[in-house]
Image (tube, rainbow, N blue to C red):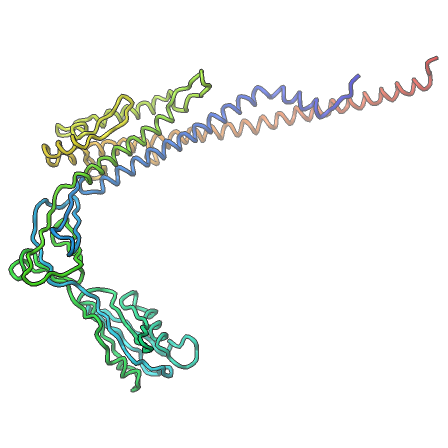
Length: 454
């Protein structure tokens, strides 16, 4: 008679009684987890597409414009979607500069006991520098570097002025540079609060390195056009156009010609952004709905037969084919193949824009809560059906999966308890049987000793 192993036999019997239920729970748990993962992927794909719609809607128009000067030697220009095509004359009379002053022969002096020095700018702003707290190394003497550091670290400076020490030919100077260009950035240093000393004298006699100067341009010819003066070299006087100048012109020069025209490549890039975002979403949906293949042993994707996801794909397809004001995306070169993949024909796009000015924005519209319109508005509204954090389909499905997972966890807990009860009961029974077997073996051995065979 074979020896009895209580642990092994109890495990086998307890497993046999619970195996069917355990297999079912394991399969259902795996399915629930797969569904949860697929919902997360679907949510990410929809959110990415929604974000692309929002980004495109942030542009005032998908139609882009470019701006350029007749000569690149004097500056550069850019145009936004609000610019108006046309040619403009511009004369650059003067560039804006940032004030820079120097203070020479600053002596190393004992820590000042007088009041602070004040740094004033022409725009009315100012800040104070407490030199009595500038002695960083505690040697009782203020060095040029400590004065510069105290200016840079002064409360209220915040980049208004930058101070540094410049040494040339063995001579060091304190150089202060304004943080803003133009006349309003002119620096004035008030050292009247210091006691009479060589330091006070030096700080009261600056040398102008670069004067504070506004930029001046003329829209039209010099002296006869419209004069524009400001502290920056970047001008936005023409709506939708930004001009940055790097060199002034000489009196008598012919004004620059600023040309603002449609930027077909920029417009195509905007449309391509939509096409790419749509195709990325379609690719994600393909992966989540692909059919199984028995020949290759490939399982079907989670949403292969999901009617809700099928309705989502149908809605996307029908929306991009809708007509808005008598125009459709395909009129502007956006078409879908038999698999739902979009492509862009830039030649058709350019021809359609020439034939229908403003039509591109009419068809694409806006994805906005207040001005929802066109293809993007319709798609954005439908995205909310799935992505709404309170009532969306993703939220509802996730809640359902979570409830299923909780139920499966509870069932697993109960099954584990049932398995343990079976195991303990069988372990006790087989342990008793093992003990009986051992006793019988001992008795048999005793009888063999008492009655040996002849």
